[in-house]
Amino acid sequence: MSSLAPDTVAVFGPEDSNIEDLDAETAIRIATGVGLVGLIFISEAPRHALVTTRRLADKLGIPIVVGKSLSVGDVVERLDYMARFPELGIARALQEFIRRLPLVGHSPERLLGAVSDQLSCTVSVVDAYGSHVRGSTETGVTSPQILDHLQSPRPSGRSMEGPGGATFVVEPVAISRDGPANLWLIATLTASTEERIDLARHLLAVSAWPLATELLQRSLTAEREGRQRSMLLTEVVEHSSAPPRQTVERATALGWRLSGWHTAISIASRDSGADARGNLAARVIEDGLKLHGLVADLVERPEGWVFWTTTEVEPMAEDSGKIVRRVRDALEWVASEVPSASLAAGVGLPFEGADGIRASIQEAESACLLARTRSDTVAVEHSDATSVRRLLIGYYSNRPLRDVATHLMAPLHKADTSGELARTLTAFLDNNSSATATAKVLDVHRNTVLNRLDKITALLELDFSDPEDRLAAQLAVHLAELD
Image 1 (cartoon, one colour):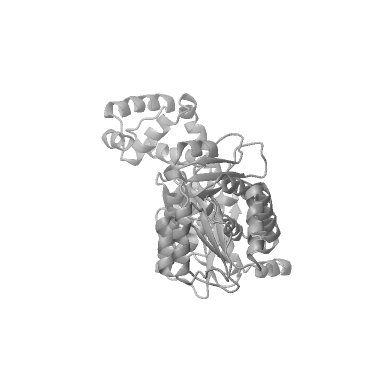
Image 2 (cartoon, helix red, strand yellow):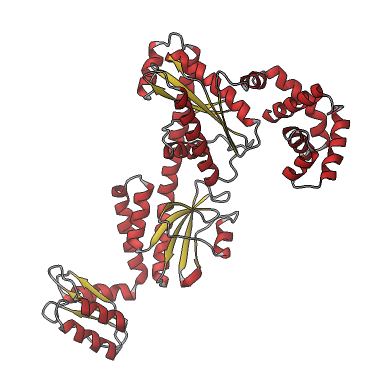
C-alpha cells in the first residue's frame, strides 16, 4: 500500500487488500481517520465491492476506484503525473477522443453519446431558446444568463453556473462565426472541477465541427433530393399520358408508383416568411404525417408541397374522409410543435394512372386554395365532386379574378398597412354581416366595428345592404388574401 499521508490517495495492490474482502471496509475507516481523499484497489481480474463496502464508502464520503494494472508503482506514477500536470491529462483525454471520432461515424446521436461517455454527464443539442433538439432530454435551460448567451449576436463557448449548483458548458454549432448560432452543444456537469470543465469545453469545441458538417451535409442532400423530386414530378405532369422511359425509370428509383389509383394532398403555409417552404419546414410536416399514418416525401411546388397515396383499386368515399382526418391531425401536431405555423391543405379526388397523378394534384391544389381562405390555424378542404364549394374552388383558382380582387382591395390596404380594416371586413362578412358578432370575434367594442365599417365603405365605395356588393366583397377579400 502507498503512503497514508493526508490529502492523498491510497493505492492497494492484490497482495494488500481485496475489494471483495471485509478488509476493504477497514481500509475505508482508516482512510477517513487519516484524511485521505480516495482509495484505489488494483486487481488482475474484474472485482466488485460488497454492498456493505459501497454503503460505508458513500456514508463516509470516500471515493473507491477498482482498476486493472501491472503494478501498484505504475498506478502511483500515473496518478502523480496527472496530479502534477493536469493539463497533460486533459490533452491525453482529448487525444483519445479524437482518435475515436472515425469509429463514432456520422450519426449526431452517436457523437453526442461518445461525448457523454467521455464526460460522464448529460450532453445534448438545444436551440437558441434552450429547447431540446437532440441528445439527452434531461437538459433543461431555464437560467436567464444562459439563455441570453445562447441568443448573443457573436456566439462563443463558455461555462456558466446553473440552477442547483450544476455547471453548464455550451458551445455553438455553426458553419460561420459571423452571426448568431441556431444550435448549441450543452453539457451539464453536476460535480465539476476546473479540470473537468476545461475538458468539457475542449470536447464540445472538437465535436461542434463534425456535428455542423453532418447537419450541413444532410441539408444539402435533402435539398438535392427535393430538387430531383420536383423535376421528376414536372416530367410526370407534362408527359402524364405517355411518360418517357427515363421518367418511368427515375420514378421507380424513387419508389414512386405510376399505376394504380392516386389521391393527392397539397399543403401550403400561409406564412409569407422566407423559411415558410424550407427544408426544415418540410421535414417537420413529414414527421407529423408519419406519426399519423401517412408516409410522405413532400415534393415542392410553387405555392407549397404535394404528395399522394396510391391504392390498387379505386378508393371508397370514406377512404378520402380518413385521409382528410389524418392530414388535419398531422397539421395540428405540426402547429403544436411550431406555434407560429399556419397551414392549409387540400385533398384531391382519386384518379387512375400516371395521368391521374396530374389530375389529383390539380384538384388538391385547388382545394388547398379554398382552405387558405379560412381563418383557422389549420384548415383542410376536400375536393368533393358533389360539393357546392367546388364553385368557390374554380373561382379562387382563376388568376385574372384574383388580380381583380387585389385591385379592388388595394385602397383598403393602402389606407391601413396594419391590416386592421381588412381583418374587420373579413370578420364582418364571415359572421353574417353582424357588427355584434364581429366585435366579439375581434374582441373590440361594437361601436369600434361600426366606425371601421364606415371607413371601409367610403374607401371601397360599397353598399353592404346590397346583396351583390356584399357577395363581391366577401369573395374579393378572400381572393386578395391568397396574394
